Image (cartoon, rainbow, N blue to C red):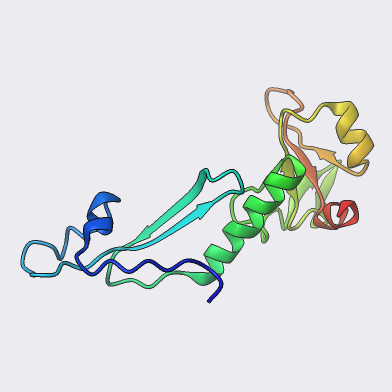
Length: 147
């Protein structure tokens, strides 16, 4: 195992971090802990916390997806949308629709248009009712070219 595992026989750590499952704690001498996942970045800041009840196992696909999304965001000034990487399978594009942006990500608003054009020349600005050009999609393969 290449990640830390903490022993907590007396549940003191679990109690300190709010990890005791309230649905099981009243009637048991040793209450069950929730299934918790903490993802911490290289600066030792908590980036993500997932909590599952004691009766539900962790979703390893979701944990892996979250780690990938956090790494991309950390390295490339992007944000992953809902359902990434299976998002944007069909979006309005020009006068029709396209599936070319499946798996795409958003550029953060902190990325200027000049930086976007320089680093991601194929990005697509989504049309929104406000006409504010802030939703800018970058295809997955264009991210991989920058690696």
